[in-house]
Length: 64
Image (tube, rainbow, N blue to C red; front, side):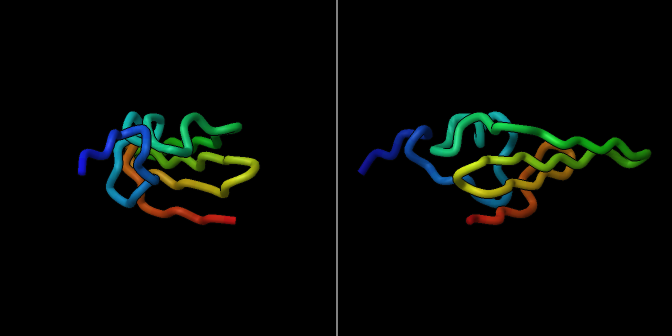
């Protein structure tokens, strides 16, 4: 069975572009922190939950 990227749920290890193409799409809001070693981002989805990135790779997903 062929699964299109747009039908995929967000997963640990996905890149920013892969999440944007997932079923969650673009977030409602992004909180970003920059450190000497890189960045963290929290993507907020009002109806779905949160996705957390370290250096633009998913490290955690919190669903509502």
